[in-house]
Amino acid sequence: MKNICVLVSGGGTNLQALIDAEKRGEIKNGRITCVISSKADAYALKRAAENGIKTRVLARKEYDDTVSYSMAMLDILNEEKAGLVVYAGFMTILDKCVCRAYPNKMLNVHPALIPSFCGKGFYGLKVHEAVLEKGVKLTGATVHFVNEVCDGGPIILQEAIPVFNDDTPESLQKRVMEQCEHKLLPKAVSLFCEDRIEVRGNITIIVR
Image (cartoon, rainbow, N blue to C red):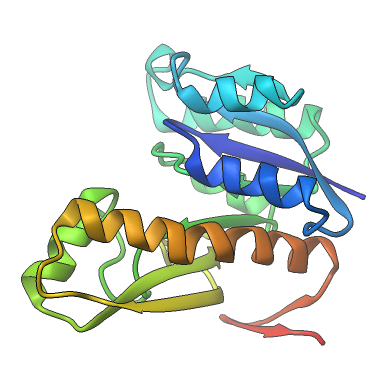
């Protein structure tokens, strides 16, 4: 049984999707053991507490630089014996020391079809604004491993939905979350905990 540590910064809708999936028995061989927030007032902490999950706060503003913050995060992950680290709306960039300590053991969900609309500066509503400005007909979400390149780790799962003519960034964000992110993230977490993801270079193979 793998210990899953979830990193959050805000409302925690993806965290809730993980909690609900675990309760339904959809996450095999893994359990959420700790939720770590970069902000003390993140609503995600309340979601965790209401479901009996341990919470910890590591406030980014209390650290002078990325490296010192990342070293503190690494200490916590080691203390919690993390078998898997999941970014669920975690808006703080960590130093490479963390992903090097947990190679192919950190997952992130990105609200677009990587390699489009990803990398530095593409987060939250900014992603959906860019999608609409470009006029693409399909968008979606991607779950990938975290490495030293922003949104550059091996892709695990993707899901696409159509972009409608009357979409706003807010309506598109809502649909991508509900129809893509909330489905893909629990599925990818379970695949990892079941040891069904093989990484070959920058490509993943899902073992049946």
